[in-house]
Length: 307
Figure 1 (tube, rainbow, N blue to C red):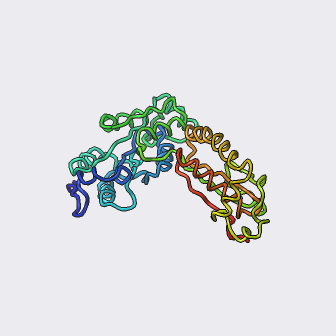
Figure 2: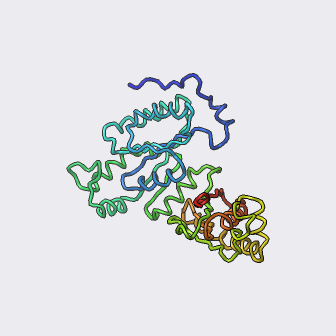
Figure 3: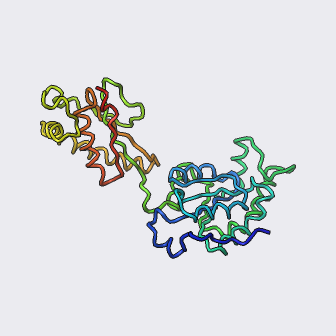
């Protein structure tokens, strides 16, 4: 018999936790459901949302992890996958979740399901036995697992039937079900670089600003960079510079919306000039500033200091 769950001294009370900012409140998500219903993809989606994920955990260890989570620290959102792979350990899952609730710890259960026909097809496609199949046929294992999970399914806070979902559809539903309102769906990196050092390998979009006059050839600007007001003013005052920034930002915003729909969490815009010191730095900073109203943006200046 497991020891009663006690919350150690120094852990914030539930009222105190409720007063914390949304992104600092401890969250425990128990991910379970039918084998073959998509838990692997669910784990990937949760990790993309910055959840700390523990896979294939014996239920008895949930109490220990919950104590760690409630104790505060760098991890505030933890997802734990508990399913039939834990074999005989799984029999104690109901008593463990009761123990968690009795200890006053908040958690949610996400249950993934699919029809028997779909599960049979999925197992056939990967040519693997069902974890509860034993000496029987594949369908025997599925039915045995479904019966064993019935009570846990009834207790689930969120049930997702993946029978007709693509992997991308499932990831979208995971985001809707457990995503924090403070989560940003996409992060934008705006990077300056010098063409003479090569185009960044991880660039999604490449912008060439060598159509602007180079401050390098102005002796009083040569030793400065695009971070300096003198260079920035020189670059942005040129004919076509601000119009280019305005039109480029207007063109890229709908693309960012498409990336959000396609679950692309990061995008890198690379802005290049000859050496990556003057024009590209100034334009990259200007583009980044204009995009900050639609997404979190950071600027990187790859080739500053190369000369």
